[in-house]
Image 1 (spheres, rainbow, N blue to C red):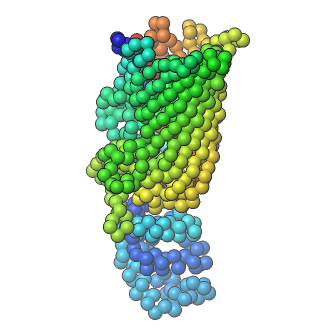
Image 2 (tube, rainbow, N blue to C red; image 1 turned 60 degrees about the horizontal axis):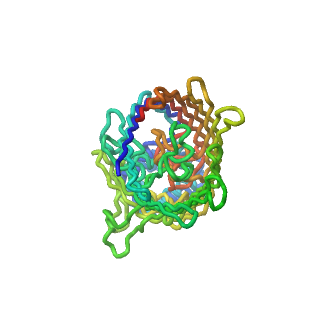
Image 3 (cartoon, rainbow, N blue to C red; image 1 turned 90 degrees about the horizontal axis):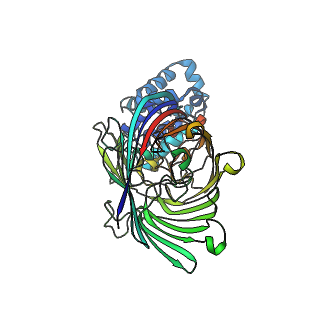
Length: 561
């Protein structure tokens, strides 16, 4: 009936260097704040763009200039019509020749010159999509701009207060309070650059820096019993669902959580029912666990909580974890998870760069968030279902050639989209579960994660790891402890090397390491939008910044007692 406490404190220095960040040109993103010119004007421009002569002249940069100042287009056409040689060429064009014969054309051009900048503000989703489709059809979408960024010195401090109690032989309790703070910042809310990690939400409150607030990472009871020779363990509460296998090698720790981190590294609440099958099967370490979790609660605190039919239902997760073999040297573990009705976000806090609102006439209004106001996010749509499975093989080869640890994990994900998001921004882009432009298609994704850890003098450890994810790879690892983003969610490759040196009987250790992220597709870790090759990404794919490559160097000091 005693409560045991354990403390872990880590201070870490990261040096982060981003290369080739792809972003949409400001001349395009600023058009979201300019008024829609009306169907008549857009119809005329669409008609003009059917002209072979116009198609040969128009460039993406020129079209952006016209959107900023339609008078540029009006003056260009007026000058073309007044030049005899150009006028003759226009008469040979099947589209422009008809427009030249229109007696209202001079008045139309004069009106065009006075309407002001053209954009998406006040357009319906259909009108905005038609405008974007016209730009796509006639190759008028500008390229993304590229830039580099460096954060040479970023300090963080993370503190875990671990709690354990054995109430009696059949009942136990475990919990953890956590603080994760970036030096020089205690707001707990980030500016949103398009990543789930930019939102302070239930799944990442203690796993990413969120101010100096003490938060509950895990709290659950274990009730032990048995069915004949099969030990049974039932657990309920906030789950130990972060820092799972095989992250213990790089963290220099025991296993930190139940789900395999290759598919789930995410804080959630729920339950588990575990059966110990070692005696019944005579397989070392054999066990089978059922898991249940709640990813989103729709009936609490949302605008639709008291509706007879909420816009979004609860998001529930179910999974199994099967320990196929574990003799303390070698192990094989299989993990499967399924989530129903994944939503287009979670409840959380962030600072949006702009604010979108839907008006009573189904038009959308856009305004810049110049005041830096904090937004409470909530999901608006059930996107579809998600499945994932992973098999982890681990071994310690001390009996063969020294205390060398190795692991290999292969993973699969499957997305089954049902509808596009009703969030105004994503709706305009026609985005759903790993889909864009309203094209709802099922997709399979794959990932490989491998590592080796060598013994070094003075009880040190040298580790090398590699991770790869395919185009449609998607997992729930947004709570991974990284200032860049989850390497296990990467659509591309991540290379990492580290050296761990313990002191004072493992109560204190230093870790020096480096990572290289080489993203191949957009949207790593994000369920919304079709991933496209970064080298082929246009401005429409980069309204949120898209990172191509990242170098990270880090040094940390950790104390445990």
